Length: 403
Image (cartoon, rainbow, N blue to C red):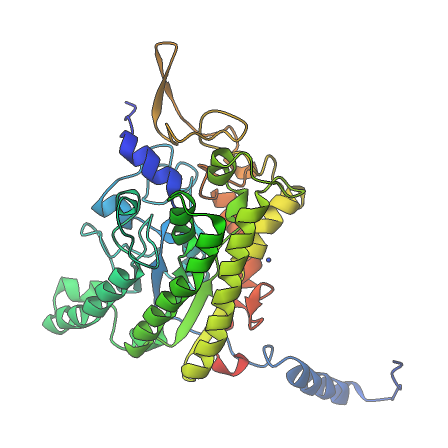
């Protein structure tokens, strides 16, 4: 039986949320020693042990939500989750998202949403992200379009979560095993994927692009303030994403048709706003490393990684990168009136808005979010260290000496 998605939910989901060498004759054994020493000097990353993250705590919006919004406000419906989970699993994709691949790369289970009270297991971390979340609290009508769980609220939730879980552990019993150990909090990886909705709120709130750009410094100040607060609660290893190429999303392309396109078909000016946000974030994190010398802070250029899917889709096995896999109508297969999983009446007949035939060869899932296939490619790119500052792989994100 097909479930009709409420109009408010469809609109909500549509908004949410880069000299010669002298030769010597050296015995084999000695040459190996020389090579080992050279590798250590030239590449300190190679000489450093991998990190052991016993848990992950994530903060963010829809790109990293594993069910927070679904548990609290709006549950996504079929065909969300069809590729991997074979059912809606609270993720805004056809399958797994980047945070899922991160967890699995460390041998950890998928993160349970903090807001989900049913069947949750926080023993290896928790996910405070909810779709539609912003860094700053929104005012006026914008509050109705986005999640009330902004980053400040997520910090407050984490602040309460930490002592409560230890109280439950101290009580013993079956529930104690579902809570993280106290030593996991300073040893865990803390990931942040948030900011796109702050820009989107401006775009759809009748602000000019100049005004949105002008709001960025204050957004970044709010972000770093929350990171410092979480650091003060014991967090030490931070993996922080910039925002993606928002101008390549059907959400933007379909709603701002007059916007100038770049050579790949993306809305140039909107991507430039995202780049401005990212530059401000990068500079702020550079300062934060000085202010928090005990922390390992990694800036993750997810913008460049994602943009490469639009500039060279064939390299990764993708096609039609600007067209939504699950959607309805127009050049970009996207409409504000009906979203993925919704029902639209056409000539008196109800039409279910389902997915494309092969999500595995598509970049964009529902006009705003990425397919599992695209998420996996992006994870592989960023986890290698090729898109991070400092340039270290995910498995070494606990080391401060590279920052």
